[in-house]
Image (cartoon, helix red, strand yellow):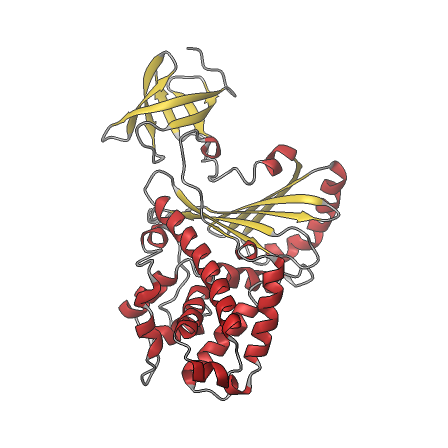
Length: 394
């Protein structure tokens, strides 16, 4: 078989040796490959030939891996309820939150009020008129407080009950501890008692974790007796509606946690998690994908961090941005539909670059016209690895 630079070929993994060498099948012949990308027997890879020397160097096109892959977790709470249900939920929550009986309630119901406010504000859209810092704060809260790592946060508090216990979660630990228990029946005991001093539950509510707040609301509704319902002026059908809405949101989060666990085995270098976030005055949400490294970085080396986002603007159409951060070096690639949009983006970058250059040691930005790159956003679950990751000895 003759390999030419630029060729794309498929290869099947047959066997993995102990020295990082992999026996692969290329159609009618087999060859040993030195590869530092995690693969498994039976997996089919799409490879791009970089040079045809000896050995042959190839790049794994990781976003084109043919083998079956579990779906990546996608936090899309906006689609958990219909528009009519969201309107009804907002009206009911506004009346419930403003109830004098709830305002004058003891500590546990003050936590409940905060949880209800958080549920009401769940679909607050991101405004594109905000500063870069404000946008970053909005995105950070949406990602870290989405509820996906609720059990991990709770476990961290028990192991280290300090203010730093709920640090940002990423990497293999995120997948390994994403879900300790799917049945919420274990949580009411924590919710129901409020001893002196902060409990893990108090701390989780202070961090605005969505799943903690939903579980608190669910537990309260499940345990609501007729006397309390009368005091709060809430009808049985309204309680049933709230239970249905909260249950649907919890179900969505737990489904994504299951996906996270299914994708946890070391078959890829990155754990991919997607977030769909509503945007003010735009009909389509912001689609954000984060790539968490699944292996600890070697000492002295900075593991690249990847973020991909797609924003469908009503006037400009879809715009894709790929961000790669290595240490304090930032590389940005914007993909747009037309040359006119490309020129507008390049002009806008003149204003943005000074802000970014003040935050990073080095910033590289590229604007390209690529309809194909935009179209493949929803299909890609991995990022392409750096060139030279595979050496094949024929």
